Image (tube, rainbow, N blue to C red):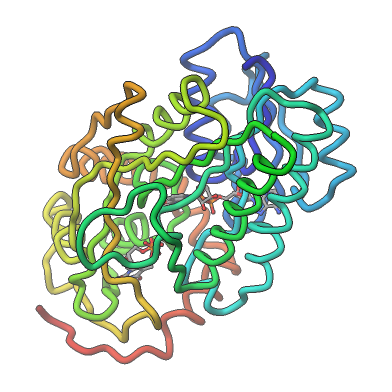
Length: 343
Ligand code: NAD
Ligand code: TYD
């Protein structure tokens, strides 16, 4: 692993991965290739902008010729694919872009991996491909039960990776992460949305009864897990990466308010998301067997996350001021009933 192509490296997890890799290793070249959609943000990469081992290209993973050019120019031996449309709520409004990037874009990268004979391509996937699990924990060979256009598109990408491993021996691995929290997350995702709304004394819109369970993991734990799989994972294998802990959305919401010393009266229960998955839970023993272990429990992860958004208000205020952000907010929230303006 010497010349790594990080697609989607200007997004939330991708940029954290780039920082971590450049901080940890001085014998690698990191080439970020990102379309800079609404979620891509070059501000996320400012800390590495002058690093001589880092190069940025603006480009779409669906454009095979551009991908090919970068692969050749930088003698890419490793691809880590973070590039995706990622928000379930947006996938309910406009599924087409999800199918395009998350399925077709993954196919373009697999073709590039095959043509250039890479040592490894890791597909960054999600626990959402298992669908909701009301009991027990998802294991890597469980059946996929996708329920949203987002999770269905991600599952399509995963299946294409497995097909390229089986049919063409392309050395792929797939990592399936749970919900990440931490610095540089686009503030329409629930945790930065709630932190920033609370700092602005605006309501925190909780879908349904707020009792949905998520495995909220700290983004750097996830990034370390991906690095571990790149180094020790077996070709053709899938690895779940999560904290293995479960937190309801309402507990997460109250933790944020408590850390910010804001009143619980900011909580607003609103009409639920259609097809809202009730619970995700991962069995992470396979990744742990490689030697990886998460370092942050929920309390530490949420405290570190809140602290960052408090100390970096310019970062999220700049995003929230944009027309695209405000139009999306209006479109997603304006028509929903408020069930309760107090707990
Ligand atoms: P994000 O939305 O913050 O970032 C996605 C990045 O991909 C952006 O920089 C965007 O510009 C780029 N991108 C989108 N379409 C592209 C295209 N066609 N070509 C090139 N670049 C493109 O997403 P994230 O939260 O950082 O998620 C990264 C990956 O991790 C995704 O594949 C997602 O499915 C997966 N994942 C996310 C989570 C989570 O909790 N956020 C959990 C598990 C897995
Ligand atoms: P999200 O960050 O969209 O991730 P997921 O892909 O797991 O749905 O949302 C996390 C959880 O928070 C999910 O159960 C939906 C819920 N949620 C709200 O209650 N209110 C909101 O405004 C948003 C965006 C999400």
